[in-house]
Image 1 (spheres, helix red, strand yellow):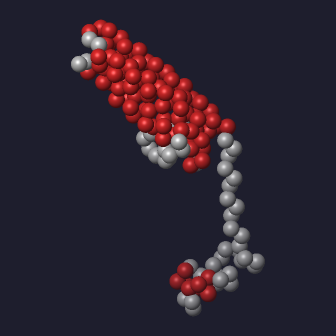
Image 2: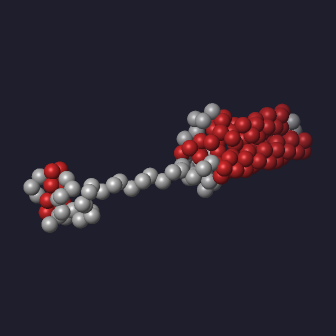
Image 3: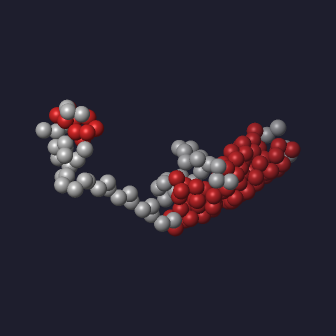
Length: 148
């Protein structure tokens, strides 16, 4: 058994799992797996879209690694090494292309709308004088919250 054949097999299994989860929109935004570029990490929605687009190519690249690694396990000598290296190269090229597609899809997403600042009540300048309802929420001790 060639240990070199285990590399594309194990890496392929991991990529196939991550790609499938991304394609099915079941991959949560996290520190380790999926397409992780500034564009995809902007918010949860862009992460979901970027990894959905990248999911199928990444899963296919992982499948190539699994099949190539399994075939290389059945072979011996230089042939096993060549098959394992070709499977690893195919896995890397296809998964990288999927990552680029996911990044571009995330970049094409519109920027999220900024949340408007809460409006201050009429006559309130944010001075915490108690006139805007702070006195009602803390009782008579307005000075305890920084009021006068």
